[in-house]
Image (cartoon, rainbow, N blue to C red; front, side, top):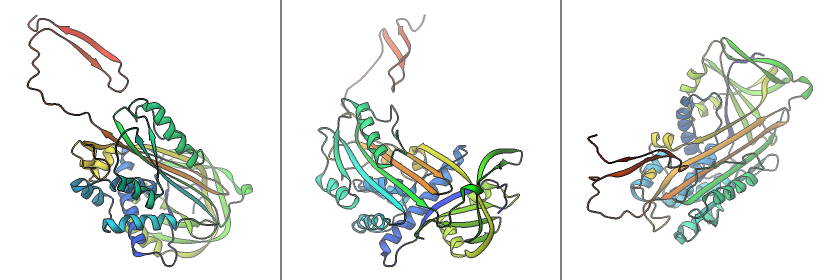
Length: 397
């Protein structure tokens, strides 16, 4: 690995399944990875430089949401999330997979919660499934009367569950009086390198953002160490294990003169599994990666639409397994993830909020005809600010 490294990809925190993991748990993991890479491929084209996601957090929050979906809405979600298990096997498999992530040498904490509008009716079966398979508690908040207070309550929960890494998942305006339910997931990871980077070896270096631009970084170094490695066509793959050998970080580095976008274009769950299977123990004179921190916050409605989840975001959604009240639909899916990598190891956190809204009751009326003088106002619906105000007395004037 060259000292002046060109852009690279933090590919994944790779889970190695314990002996005895069921086919269902493996199926859910494969679906999570396929969905995660498909979503990454869409989001990376948005123009953001750095990007960090937690597919596990997103898949878990959407799995709880899926439990309340029915009909075509459920079919779209299942296809987009790449699930192949029957519904009665899916949620137990997710539970098994998430439970298997606990370890002594690393720290992975996962938490789920449901936040329902006070007085809103939810099916008992839905709440029991969320609690039984996702350990998701149900709390009532006042979305209709005090949406911002409810937002702050949810954010405080996320802040605590991510060990204060994500303080404000939901921003002002993300919750409003039409919100009836928010489904949240939080994941927090702390891992110590199996082969630690020596603080004394960390040195200032140049990171080549592009052919004509460099930025300074603190480059960490591990000397004379053996890691699993694969040299593919146009890239290198290196595995950095954490203590305990169960969790690892994979780093994909484009070859000198190659473009990161070309590597990303070929990035998929299947290709990653193939490349990882070809890694061989390799003794390196020096392995160097930058010490850095990165964070990403996204609203994923458009990206999930493009992945095939469309009905769920419209008043035609069928979430009748969640609540008898209709219409109810997903307003947006908010996601934030943060990572810090240093000589000791890695801290990473991710959180997802699926915001369910309910439209007003649509009444029937015969006609609205503006055939006499009227006042008209142009305003911002989110803040209520009036941008323009006028009246029309004589259209012909």
